[in-house]
Length: 293
Image (cartoon, rainbow, N blue to C red):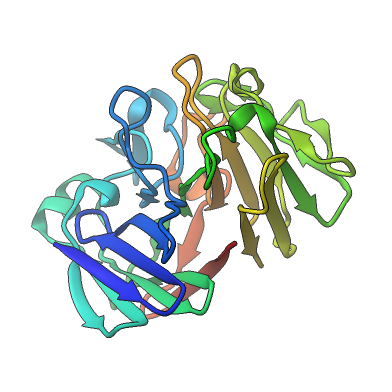
């Protein structure tokens, strides 16, 4: 099923499978979301839940019991229920069930809220813990892919830049792919625009520590005035990624409330770096906004 939001400027399509943002198209025909070419990357904007990134040996432990789990968890491949929709707003929901509990032993309700206002789309993650007595341990994140070839066949990765505000030095967490190596951080200079290229991602994603500070990223090219502006208020981490060596003219801007395992981690889920601990009966809400121009 496809959910459609529409106003005088944009038409938005959301797939009920994975609650995945599949298209944002301007009324003059510009497509802003990567169209999932299977030869390059076969997704648009997956939701990462209940894990972000790779787990050590593709498994996790709860109370000494080991559970297998693939990269980024399972929500992106599950069918969500549309619980509310009008022309500008939609809510899609995934709830725990016997199949999820067998591989992830926590009750949860995950809702994705999409709100379209003029040129802006806001995506909000709502996680509820319906348990009466068990803490919910989880990570969540976004992985939207944004086209860089906007409105002109001459635009693309190699004549695009990414601007980051605030202009400052960020802490970058290195990867020993697919795991993180936070013991050896490096400095990322955001005082100047980041010149994009496919080779920039030969070692996988650029991971920045945001420390819950509001951060805005904006794409620009040398040919026209089209791009996106992406703002997240309170994420601890942000991934910047495009595939390599397979290449496409798009970039993923990924707000994360959670992160991949460290190179040495082999412990209980409650001790995992960046894990969220949600008490019984409580609710977690985080969001990001995207402006399209």
